[in-house]
Every structure is written in C-alpha cells, then in structure tokens.
Length: 312
Ligand code: CUA
Image 1 (cartoon, protein in one colour):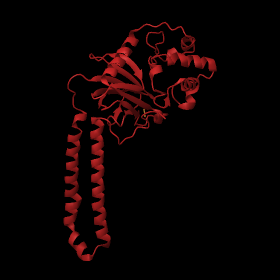
Image 2 (spheres, protein in one colour; image 1 turned 45 degrees about the vertical axis):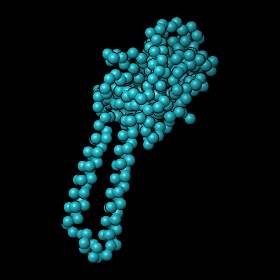
Image 3 (cartoon, rainbow, N blue to C red; image 1 turned 120 degrees about the vertical axis):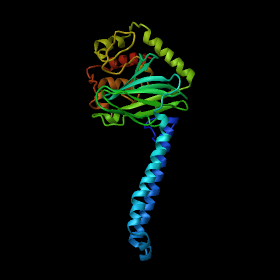
Image 4 (tube, helix red, strand yellow; image 1 turned 90 degrees about the vertical axis):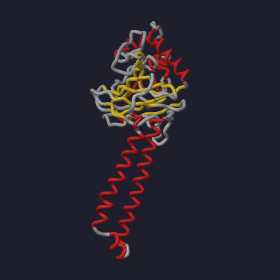
C-alpha cells in the first residue's frame, strides 16, 4: 500500500483544503434542503387535499418558488462561497517557497525556485514542503491539459499549455499526501499520481540544503550500474546531477533513491520494483514513454537498481 494513496477527498489537512471542503459540505447541505422542499411540493401537488392544492397552487407560487427562491438562495451561496475561498488566490505576505510543477505525459516535472525565480533543484513526481507555511506552485504543462490535485492540501487546478497557473497549498502537520492528475490526458492518465511530503521546518531546511549541495557536487560514477546507465542509454533521457547523464526527456534521477514512489506515484520505490520498471515498464504502466529494456539480464537490472538506489 502506498502511503497517502488513494488520497481521501473529504479529509482536509491544511487551510486551503479546509475552506474548499467546508464549501462542499455547505453546498451539499443546501442542495439537500432544496431537494426536500421540492419533494414536499411534489407530494402536495400529487396527493394533497384539494383545499391545500388550491391554497398553494397558482401563479404566485411560480414567482415565489421558481424565481425569487432560487435567486435568493444562489446569490447567498455565491457570496458566501466567494468570501470563504477568497484567500485561495490572494498574494502571500512575506517569503513563500515557490515550486514549478510541469505536467508531462504521464508524470510531473518538479523544480524548486530561488528568490529570483531560477530553477535550483530538480525533482519529479514528489514535492517536499515545510509545515504551517503556504507554498506557491507554478503549474504549467509541456503537452496536453493536466490537472494538479492533492485533495488534502488544496483544490484542483488545471495545467494548461502556454499558461502558468498559481496554486497555493499548505499542510498543518507533517505527513505524506497523495495527489492525482484530475484531467483526462490520454493513455495512462489514471496512473499519473503525485506525492507531497510535509516536514517540520528544520528538517525541511536540512533537506533543501542537502539537495542544493548535491546539485552542485561533481561525481565520478565508478559502479557497474553507473557504466550501464550510460551504455544502455538511460542517460539520454534522464539526468543525474554532477555526472555525465544529462537527458531532459524523462524524470530527473538525481534523488532517485530517496523517492517514495516509482512510475509517478504508482509503485513503492525499492530495488525489486526498480528492476521491474527498467526491465518492462510497459507491463506496469502501458503506453508510458519509457521503452522496455528486455535485453538486460537480471544481473544488469540489479546493478542499475543498486546504482539508482544510491542516488539521494
Ligand atoms: Cu495528466 Cu491526466
């Protein structure tokens, strides 16, 4: 079982998700109340005593119940909804972590930004955030429309080619929160999952510091797996910071060993699943863009998996 997945949609874990959740419940309750009123009117119309039907029938009821009532109810709900969710799109006071998330067929490219908006840390399918602080996500798409949705942390927002949409998320306590692409984007759309991990601020700082150092370090890979990574062709599509592997088509594998999941949130990440994924990801996630490497022997798959496991 993957931690935080499937994500519960009615269990908010932060202020942004809370207001969306509250609004859903209020709308649901109001819709239910209106349904009861309509059913009562229907019952009276069908089975009520003639005197009662006489009293409530006629044009007056049409104007009151069919025009005035919906106008009042919908106006009140609209104003309430807008005031409740106003902070979802308001600018954040002070410094907030900014992360660019790009929807790709069928995974998520993640880049942490510095204050000048430069991409300083690359990752994929996983996002680390500090608890108790709003985080701004710049959502964009590299191909078709996707929709970013981590139900426990915020509402959903489309990722549209040629546009950049801003979404704020926040977690109140440390934890792992699952996400899911919420707009059909072809092929294995249903297998386009995401993971957000919320840490205590100190732990988060350490993690970012370590990732920054790792980006700048220069590594000379000597393991058998490292040579295979190059000769088999992995490095044409994947990047590992500080090595010769600089491919940009697929997920960045610099922190491959520290990720919780594999294949964009669909498998736990361990040596066995890594070997299976490299050997034939098409059997696990049909039509994803990574070709199967059935020519590799079990020993070669093991060496590659060990090498990737070591990338933190
Ligand atoms: Cu990406 Cu659906």
